Image 1: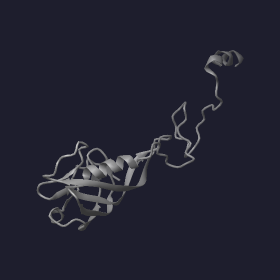
Image 2 (image 1 turned 30 degrees about the horizontal axis):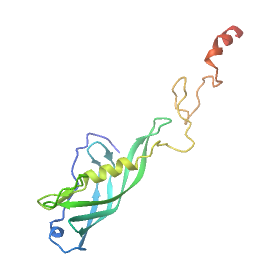
Image 3 (image 1 turned 120 degrees about the vertical axis):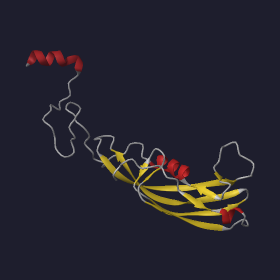
Image 4 (image 1 turned 180 degrees about the vertical axis):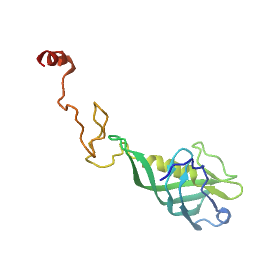
Length: 172
Protein backbone atom coordinates (compact mmCIF):
# COMPACT_ATOMS: atom_id res chain seq x y z
CA UNK A 1 0.00 0.00 0.00
CA UNK A 2 1.44 3.33 -0.98
CA UNK A 3 1.02 5.67 1.94
CA UNK A 4 0.80 9.02 0.20
CA UNK A 5 -1.24 11.45 2.28
CA UNK A 6 -4.58 9.71 2.08
CA UNK A 7 -7.39 12.04 2.94
CA UNK A 8 -9.78 11.04 5.67
CA UNK A 9 -13.03 10.38 3.83
CA UNK A 10 -16.18 9.31 5.61
CA UNK A 11 -17.84 6.01 4.81
CA UNK A 12 -21.49 7.03 4.85
CA UNK A 13 -24.76 5.41 3.82
CA UNK A 14 -28.24 6.85 3.33
CA UNK A 15 -30.46 4.87 5.71
CA UNK A 16 -33.34 7.35 5.80
CA UNK A 17 -35.69 4.64 4.51
CA UNK A 18 -35.07 2.70 7.75
CA UNK A 19 -35.57 5.65 10.09
CA UNK A 20 -39.33 5.55 9.47
CA UNK A 21 -39.65 1.81 8.81
CA UNK A 22 -41.26 -0.78 11.05
CA UNK A 23 -39.18 -2.68 13.58
CA UNK A 24 -37.26 -5.54 11.97
CA UNK A 25 -36.92 -3.89 8.56
CA UNK A 26 -33.39 -4.24 7.24
CA UNK A 27 -31.02 -2.92 4.61
CA UNK A 28 -27.73 -4.37 3.40
CA UNK A 29 -24.92 -1.84 3.17
CA UNK A 30 -22.11 -2.81 0.81
CA UNK A 31 -18.73 -1.47 1.87
CA UNK A 32 -16.26 -1.54 -1.03
CA UNK A 33 -13.65 1.17 -1.15
CA UNK A 34 -9.98 1.47 -2.04
CA UNK A 35 -7.12 2.93 -0.03
CA UNK A 36 -8.65 4.90 2.78
CA UNK A 37 -7.58 6.90 5.80
CA UNK A 38 -9.72 6.19 8.86
CA UNK A 39 -8.73 9.43 10.61
CA UNK A 40 -5.38 8.20 11.97
CA UNK A 41 -5.05 4.76 10.38
CA UNK A 42 -4.47 3.90 6.71
CA UNK A 43 -6.02 0.77 5.23
CA UNK A 44 -5.52 -0.76 1.77
CA UNK A 45 -9.20 -1.41 1.22
CA UNK A 46 -12.49 -2.05 3.00
CA UNK A 47 -14.79 -4.78 1.61
CA UNK A 48 -17.80 -6.47 3.09
CA UNK A 49 -21.50 -6.37 3.75
CA UNK A 50 -23.05 -4.80 6.82
CA UNK A 51 -26.69 -5.33 7.75
CA UNK A 52 -28.66 -2.41 9.23
CA UNK A 53 -31.79 -3.54 11.09
CA UNK A 54 -34.45 -1.21 12.51
CA UNK A 55 -34.71 -1.75 16.27
CA UNK A 56 -36.41 0.19 19.06
CA UNK A 57 -34.90 3.69 19.07
CA UNK A 58 -32.29 3.07 16.41
CA UNK A 59 -30.53 0.84 13.92
CA UNK A 60 -28.53 -2.27 14.77
CA UNK A 61 -25.56 -2.43 12.43
CA UNK A 62 -23.60 -5.67 12.19
CA UNK A 63 -21.41 -7.51 9.75
CA UNK A 64 -17.81 -8.18 8.78
CA UNK A 65 -15.56 -5.96 6.71
CA UNK A 66 -12.25 -7.31 5.36
CA UNK A 67 -9.20 -5.08 5.13
CA UNK A 68 -5.41 -4.96 5.10
CA UNK A 69 -3.10 -2.90 7.27
CA UNK A 70 0.58 -2.11 6.72
CA UNK A 71 2.36 -2.75 10.03
CA UNK A 72 5.96 -3.00 11.20
CA UNK A 73 7.30 -6.25 12.62
CA UNK A 74 8.25 -5.72 16.27
CA UNK A 75 11.45 -7.76 15.87
CA UNK A 76 13.00 -6.68 12.56
CA UNK A 77 11.04 -3.46 11.87
CA UNK A 78 10.24 -4.51 8.27
CA UNK A 79 6.83 -3.45 6.99
CA UNK A 80 4.35 -6.17 6.13
CA UNK A 81 0.72 -6.31 5.06
CA UNK A 82 -1.61 -7.93 7.59
CA UNK A 83 -5.08 -9.19 6.65
CA UNK A 84 -7.73 -8.23 9.18
CA UNK A 85 -11.44 -8.90 9.59
CA UNK A 86 -13.37 -6.09 11.22
CA UNK A 87 -16.41 -7.45 13.02
CA UNK A 88 -18.84 -4.61 13.57
CA UNK A 89 -21.89 -4.63 15.81
CA UNK A 90 -23.27 -1.36 17.10
CA UNK A 91 -26.65 0.24 17.71
CA UNK A 92 -26.91 3.71 16.19
CA UNK A 93 -29.47 5.91 17.89
CA UNK A 94 -31.94 7.81 15.74
CA UNK A 95 -31.81 11.58 16.05
CA UNK A 96 -34.51 12.82 18.36
CA UNK A 97 -34.26 9.87 20.75
CA UNK A 98 -33.00 10.27 24.29
CA UNK A 99 -29.19 10.45 24.35
CA UNK A 100 -27.51 7.67 26.27
CA UNK A 101 -24.72 8.43 28.72
CA UNK A 102 -22.38 6.01 26.92
CA UNK A 103 -22.19 8.34 23.89
CA UNK A 104 -23.42 5.76 21.39
CA UNK A 105 -23.33 6.91 17.74
CA UNK A 106 -26.36 8.42 16.06
CA UNK A 107 -27.91 8.50 12.62
CA UNK A 108 -27.82 12.09 11.39
CA UNK A 109 -30.94 14.24 11.03
CA UNK A 110 -30.53 13.85 7.27
CA UNK A 111 -30.75 10.02 7.54
CA UNK A 112 -27.06 9.36 6.85
CA UNK A 113 -25.12 6.78 8.84
CA UNK A 114 -21.33 7.25 9.17
CA UNK A 115 -19.45 3.97 9.63
CA UNK A 116 -15.98 5.59 9.73
CA UNK A 117 -15.62 5.84 13.56
CA UNK A 118 -16.86 2.27 14.03
CA UNK A 119 -14.53 0.84 11.35
CA UNK A 120 -11.61 2.88 12.72
CA UNK A 121 -12.20 1.51 16.22
CA UNK A 122 -12.43 -2.08 14.97
CA UNK A 123 -9.30 -1.65 12.83
CA UNK A 124 -7.31 -0.50 15.87
CA UNK A 125 -8.64 -3.45 17.86
CA UNK A 126 -7.65 -5.87 15.06
CA UNK A 127 -3.97 -4.86 15.19
CA UNK A 128 -1.97 -7.65 16.83
CA UNK A 129 -0.23 -6.74 20.10
CA UNK A 130 3.11 -7.81 18.63
CA UNK A 131 2.94 -7.97 14.82
CA UNK A 132 5.54 -10.36 13.40
CA UNK A 133 6.56 -10.64 9.75
CA UNK A 134 6.83 -14.39 10.36
CA UNK A 135 6.81 -16.59 13.45
CA UNK A 136 10.55 -17.39 13.23
CA UNK A 137 11.69 -13.78 12.68
CA UNK A 138 15.32 -13.40 13.79
CA UNK A 139 14.99 -9.68 14.52
CA UNK A 140 17.83 -7.16 14.58
CA UNK A 141 21.42 -7.66 15.73
CA UNK A 142 21.72 -5.97 19.15
CA UNK A 143 25.22 -4.72 18.28
CA UNK A 144 25.13 -3.47 14.67
CA UNK A 145 21.37 -3.29 14.04
CA UNK A 146 21.42 -5.47 10.91
CA UNK A 147 18.27 -7.38 9.98
CA UNK A 148 19.16 -11.02 10.71
CA UNK A 149 16.43 -12.51 8.47
CA UNK A 150 18.08 -12.19 5.06
CA UNK A 151 21.68 -12.66 6.28
CA UNK A 152 23.70 -12.87 9.45
CA UNK A 153 26.19 -10.23 10.49
CA UNK A 154 29.82 -10.60 11.61
CA UNK A 155 29.20 -9.47 15.18
CA UNK A 156 30.36 -11.59 18.12
CA UNK A 157 27.24 -13.37 19.41
CA UNK A 158 28.77 -14.65 22.65
CA UNK A 159 27.03 -12.83 25.47
CA UNK A 160 29.39 -11.22 27.95
CA UNK A 161 28.32 -10.20 31.40
CA UNK A 162 29.12 -6.45 31.50
CA UNK A 163 30.52 -6.87 35.02
CA UNK A 164 33.14 -9.27 33.66
CA UNK A 165 33.98 -7.40 30.45
CA UNK A 166 37.15 -5.97 32.00
CA UNK A 167 38.45 -9.49 32.59
CA UNK A 168 37.98 -10.32 28.89
CA UNK A 169 40.16 -7.37 27.98
CA UNK A 170 42.88 -8.66 30.32
CA UNK A 171 42.74 -12.13 28.71
CA UNK A 172 43.04 -10.89 25.15
